[in-house]
Image (cartoon, rainbow, N blue to C red; front, side, top):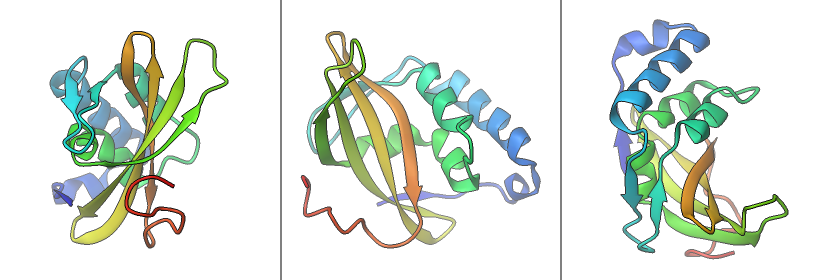
Length: 142
C-alpha cells in the first residue's frame, strides 16, 4: 500500500490551484523519469503529457489530482490489472495497474493506464476508486 500524506493547506486550495501545484511538483521531480514496477518489471516513462491528461480531464477530483505528484510510487507498487489491444494509432496495448493507496488515512485504489508503444511504456492517465476493490480484479489479471 502506498501511503500519501499531504499538507493541510492543500485542502484550502481551489481545484485549479491544486492542479497547478501538482503539475509544478511533477515538472520538477518526476517529468522524464522512468519507474520500474516492482511486480512486473515494466519500465514506465513519466511524461508531462500524461500528467496533464490526468490533471485537466473533466471532473478530475481532489484525490485524482493529488495522486499525480506521487504517481511514481503508485506505479512502482501497482499490480498488473489487465492488458488490452489498443485501437489508437501508434499504441500497441493499454496496460492497467491497480494500486492500493491510503490518502490521509483513507484507503482507496488507483488504476493507472499505461500506453505500450514500439518505443516503450508511457504513463497516460489514472483513476481513483474510493470504494472497495474492483469486483473483476482477481489477484492480478481479469
